Amino acid sequence: MLDFSSQFPQLMMLAGIVLMGWVFVRRQMKSKKRYRQEDRQHRQALKKVAASKPQSMPLADAPVETLRWQGAMFDLQRELKAELETKIMVVQTLLRQVDERIQYMETLADKVSPNPQGNASKDDKVIR
Image (cartoon, rainbow, N blue to C red; front, side, top):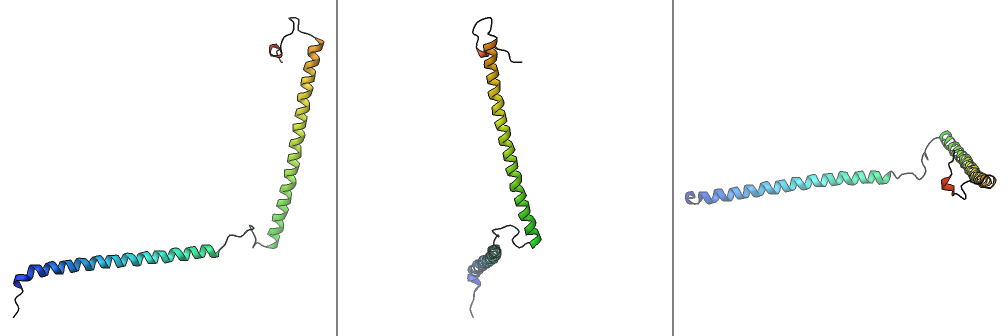
């Protein structure tokens, strides 16, 4: 019949190449399958995130009592901030008035008791 003994090495090489090709194709198919599965999971996660839109107002789905409490806290914050800003402005005004009076008293002190050495500059004075 047919004698393949002379072509045996070529047949073995062909079988090896076919086997190697099959392994590579199988690996590629598994890789694509894994990639598709991960992509599908990623898309599902994105859909979940998109479905749960962040609410424009915090605690929008909270009970009525919590919303009343939140409104009261915002009102209290606004009142306290206004009161604090008013006090800061009063302190700034008082400091400005004190600085003006200090300057006025320094000019009066210069007029009342002139420096015996002559006209000395303000830098020569010692403030105690």
